[in-house]
Image 1 (cartoon, rainbow, N blue to C red):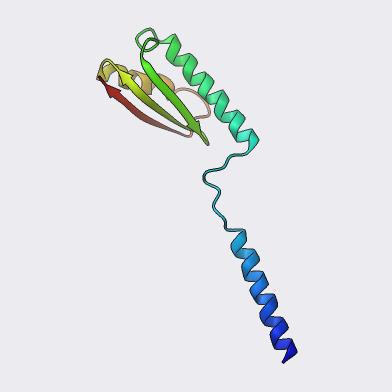
Image 2 (image 1 turned 90 degrees about the vertical axis):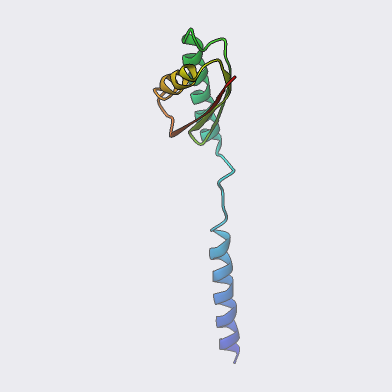
Length: 103
């Protein structure tokens, strides 16, 4: 009887420990990842500023785990496409989300 209770306890503890290890971490970043994202954001800002047609636009850049999101306003669809093209060449980008809006 006691062996059966001990076995139940150990199995329960093992399952609880395993479930705790499955906790989602999608919204957290390590210090290294934050630094990597900061470097990517800085490089993206630099390539946008170097592009004469884009440097005066209201473009916001957010980077999370290598995914870069462009948002804000541009004056033409051509400039939205151009922004995606120049930013897409920046090393380290995992995915580019071009959410620019033509005003």
